[in-house]
Length: 317
Image 1 (cartoon, rainbow, N blue to C red):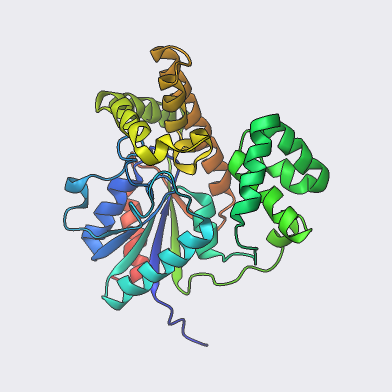
Image 2: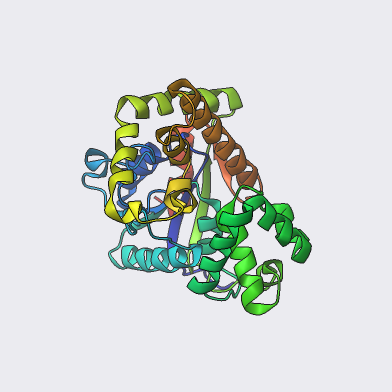
C-alpha cells in the first residue's frame, strides 16, 4: 500500500460568530501552528471591528497569513486567494509548522481544497460596462438577463448579489459560454496536502443567533460605526462611483452601516438589519458546511476538548 506523504493541515470551518478565531489560536499554540485566514472580509485593510479581525493581542506569538492583503477599494478573487494560500501553506510546512486554515468563506475553501475550474481572467472594460448598465436598469434586471442565458447560474445567484451577477455576465460576454459551463469543468490545482476538516458550530441555532446578536452589539460598543466613517472618508473610497458594489463594503454589517450613514433608517433599524444580515450569512454558511460530508462537527460550548483530541489523533501526537 502506498504511503501518503503529503503534508498535514487542519481546516477549521464554521459559521460566523462560532468561535473559530479563539479555537484556531488555541490549536496553533498547542501544535506549533500558523494560521491561514480563509475569510473574504479579513483580506481587506481597515475592516477590523466589523470583520472581527483578530487584534494584536490575539495574534501575539502566532503568525497569521492573508490578513490585510488588499485595500478596501480593490477586489480579491477566489483564484487569487487559492494561489496565495497555497504559497503560505508551503512556506509554513517548510518551517516545520502546522498550517491551520481557519474561516468561514466556503468559496475560498472550495478553491483551495478542491481546485478551480478553468475560468477566463477578469476584463476591466466589460466589468465597467456591466456596472454602467446596472446603474441604469438595476441589478435585478441584469439578473433577469442572466436567467435567460444561464438559468443554472441564475438559480444559484441571488438577484441582490451584484458581484456574482457581474462575473457571470462578464464570463458569458467574454467567451460566449455560460459560467455554469466553466464551473462544470474538472477542478485543477487543489492544495497538495492531507487535510482534517473540522466544523465548529453550536448544536442549537438559537445559541448561534444569541452569539451573533451579542457580538454585533459589542462591535457597536467598540466603535464599528466610527470605523465605517473612516473607510468612507478615504480619498480612494470617495472616488468610487458605486461603493456599495465593492466586495469590502458588501461584507456583512458594512453594507448596512454604509446605508445607515447614508441616511437610510434609524440606529435601531440599522442594528436590526445588521443582525439579520449576519444571521442570513450564518444560514448560508451552515448550508454549505452540511455539504462537506468528510467534516467532523463540534459544539464550541462543550466539544473543544474532543476537537483537540481529533487533531492529536490526526497528527499522531
